[in-house]
Length: 352
Image (cartoon, rainbow, N blue to C red; front, top):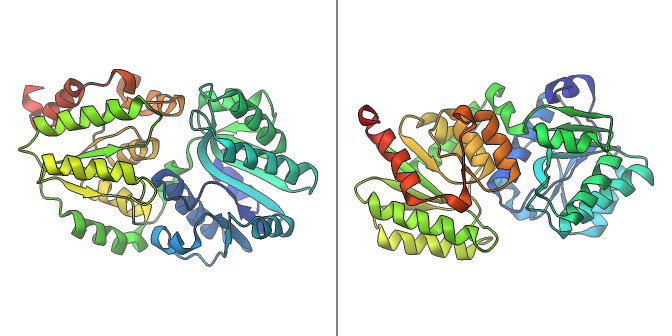
């Protein structure tokens, strides 16, 4: 069963959308925006969205007429759980390397909602990876035992979830639905982003990401060396979170800009589909270098060349499916030479 087939067969009226929406992460906000479009197309009614910061909703999302519930308010969240018939967890590699206490708590909440409150629980386009922790495996078991239906987004997630639930199916990440979605209503969003970035000709997009100690310094060093070697080229330095969430990362962008004054810097303060459409409109000019799962997938879907950097099983599974011959570079072994060969081949294709 695919996600589209499930949406055709199953009504999702009277549902609570539960995930890590509202934290300002590009991938999470992209998943929510796509899911809201899909539910709106289905004409789903009586939907509530659990959101971390209600004041930021309008910054990242269009208005679909679905009310929001403050996720940090235990009273509001519990009230919504009691009122709604269904709970939808829409996408994300939740049970992987990024496993944390909040995901464990959410998984336990799903288990209680199913077996104490009789709710239907749908895990749509989700990931469960061998790179997770012991608590991650426990959390995945709780979520799987709570689930009415699981749609896993790749081979590894399917194999792991299928051990716990016979109602596990394999499709793909929710963001793949963008290929068939009408996006004209997002034209003003991308126009505002274009005005801010003013892309003229071939441009390198370098994206930083928050990591555990070790990976971050490796990526930062490679980006710095890449900037030094490409002073003659337009560059956009990207943070796919708002600077308020990752102030240290934004300070790194400012420091890099000081060394490369012509570089433009941007953090994530816009609708996620604006970036997706920016990639689509400027696919012949943009070059993307960064390890983020949904940024890589966005580049792939829009035809933007990307360097296949992997830092976790979820990215490895994605690149195995989309990268030519499954080629990928583990972030631990990434070098500035890798980025330069990639850039040179795109700037001088005749000599590649």
